Length: 196
Image 1 (cartoon, rainbow, N blue to C red):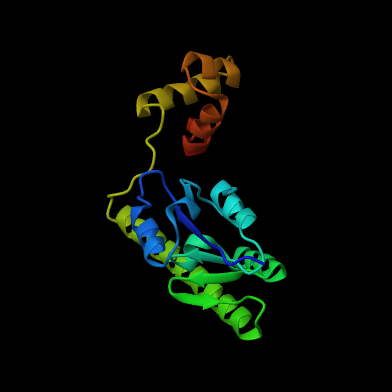
Image 2 (image 1 turned 120 degrees about the vertical axis):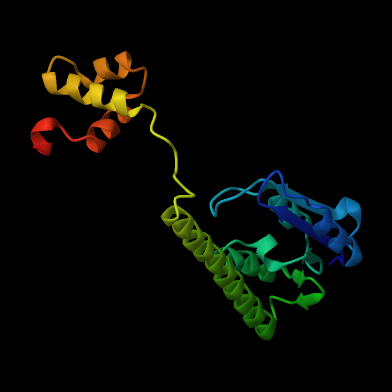
């Protein structure tokens, strides 16, 4: 049974800086060579090699230290899976300055509560982002990707399609676009017979 302190830090994008999290881990007593990191890994299903290494490094009696819970887990099931793994191996979890022993019933309850709040906070951020985008779109400040073809090209593509002389592949080649783009353009533009 060892008593090693292992640290883990993660940022979601390559442009974010890990320095603040690493500094927090230093202050919590984690040695520089005991800090594992992940950078630019997003999405709940993406693998995190740094976390895998940190979890492989801890042994019974060790403590895994993270600056904040959302750096460790990205969902309640993810947090529970990590918590169950740590508990089964006799590893303590330290979130900031609070140490939680997942094998202790109160520690396990607290860990699950923290995970629930972390997911709730992430859901609120996503909700606010969607609301902000909807407001920006309503004000005309967010337009999305522009069509690959100009309005004139779209009209001409529709006209050529209506003649029956051109297949979807022919149209894709003539306008130098993909077949899905041709289908989207046809779905977006009404034929003269439909419009009449």
